[in-house]
Length: 543
Image (cartoon, rainbow, N blue to C red; front, side):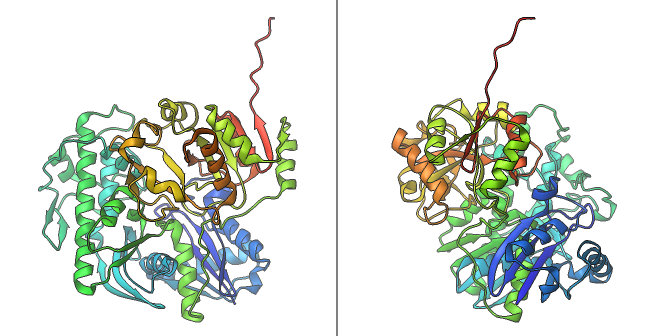
């Protein structure tokens, strides 16, 4: 049986379309449309390219599909004819399409991938199918919803409104607010923004703009109450002042308090000590760390593609569980397309660049990094989700006190307050960080141990935390070998890992994307499969 899950972004308010395929009980591929059409978030797109990719991965055609599951159940009457027409237009055939709830898909993407037999489950985001989240319990193959969160209590909209207020782009730049918050020192009075008790919260009237008046995704969500409490908003591009930093700090604090309320309330009802989280708010690593440290939580699983990127997977899992009752989920996220040696060579030849074939790419890469070079690293199947996990990565030396600024200025062209992540050998992680279990997907922050902070300045944030990725050999052999070689050279089992993309672009997908990005930013070298490309700076000639 072949079950396809999709999420379409058929208007500007929807984002991150993609496709996931479960074939004969096994998850064989998940792909995001933005990686293929090169349009970040891909608002207004049907995931035709993603569907094509996952079908190819399974070696089947559209007519082999038994079922298609898609989000958008509250708009089924309006969406069904469009989706069916898209299938016929791109593939000449439309399989049977079943609609599922947006938040239910989020819950499924977390619980069924967690490995837990029983768990509390929380979905929270901006808005989806009429709610902003759900509290539920997963047991075996069933997820029982306990409570739906109204749009007026949306934590996603709350944080997006603050993102716009601080001069960033909502539903895109929330991670900037999270990074900025770590620099804050003064908790501002927020009693005028929301009412909060031990077991409930509600935002004050006027915090949000009337949603019915919003006609563009770029239109800010915040209403007059936020301006009354905190003063005029920061315009995009204006300098960031101490006031803005403290507002970010306050907003992050509010978010964490509200999340803890939800977790505690669900725990009081269920007594279950395992927790699964999905929805866009689940990408807030700082909040996830607060949850992880709660005394009532024994085990926490954050869906790595917690945002709407995870909806195709959740939709496919809802279909699979309802029809078959089980699904095999791999213990990694390398679920996108792969490109063989001939495709690497073809891209290099087309670009007309000089290259060198390497017998041990990981050895060469580790030595380049140890010499202070910033490299692009392109291997195997692409990662699913918003984080580069060692197959489509930019890598550098975490020991350098100037490396963070160097990458920001030469490669990523981003704000100086945003941190970079350390990728560390799993068996060494607890020596360097206060971490007691694997963290392979960069979903939480952990405290850097005091004796390592000066040794890892490029990946230690201002609050002495780091968004850690632990790397196990059985999950990513190439990346593990690279870090292990870097450890052999330097005695440091960590490399700086950030996504292989230029500012405002999706993570690179193809060899051609990798070469284009390599030559458009200040990278020193590119390891493309088994091939090395470097930039040779020619001496200026004399006319």
